[in-house]
Image (cartoon, rainbow, N blue to C red; front, side, top):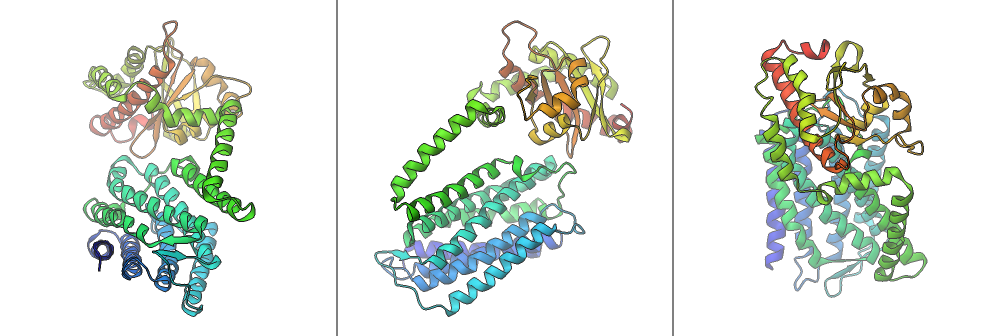
Length: 481
């Protein structure tokens, strides 16, 4: 037995034990049971990989590899189920779409297990490479699809959690992402190359061990099993994982087609795919406002100034308003504080008004304060809730993504002279909106102002919620701003 086989077995055993500990010790009922079971079964799959690699010198066992892969299919389906129910209330039923998908995966899993048990033994590996037939590659394709789905769902759940629960989920989420990257890479290579390298299995030891350590931390120590997502749940299409998973699955499928239908090698197919993808990306950035915004949001922390000096500047300026004695005083000084910090020309603060389900003006640097109302389901509020960061309002007629904002929220934008809108994201929902004009000084930096406003808006939201909770009757300011 080699050291790699021993590490594979130990990581699998550690995951199985950690899953059992999660089931026994985590508070809550169904979700910890599901999470612990999914982790324990992942450990069993990893022990199966250890058995595959046991034949020295790295010859591998093709039959055990097939058995382990077919077991991995229902295990990844269980992870999909966990990603759906995590954070949802116990009485909340699964949608028809998810029930149908899970039933289909259950049927396919049973069929795969039966095929693995009854099909003739596969060809034995040569030099540590296991050849894969069409059925095995089909199972790998289903596993890859499940990995993409639960990765996207877990990130959507993470961004939908209240702030305190996001901190609880973060360790487990990192472990899930690391395991997803390993298994997705393993599946994609098997689909494209038509074979699996036994030596690659050992690379899964670290991700599985990290996940086995992180899951009990999140579910037992930080009580993730009783966490609930905020009312303003983020759609999966708003996550980075959705973009990456969709691109990865699509690229794998296209590479497979290039290899099979056109007879291209993997290296040449990768070159063709990379060149074509680069052309499509450049074209999209050239003609699409939406694509440019997504790219800007993705690379803003790297392309603009480093955030640490900006955070220090924001904290230093916000200390001046932390001593506000009443919520009314705090709301009155926030716009002026934001104007001094960002050097934007006009700042207007809108706050949630519960009885009418709208956001209404509570203070402004414009005198007299403008009249502006934004509905909770208006396009501007929906976009800010989805983006969770400031957006620019250029008012261009060809801006198809924001055209509904310019039409339905036209009056609020014009009255507040808004060119930038930032959300005030509270613990569980968006509690307000900041509308700002452009830089007051000619030639001012929009990018710096937006970055500063983004950081400041998070501090303002925390200050407002903290002041409401400690100095006024609960909910008073939100129902009567």
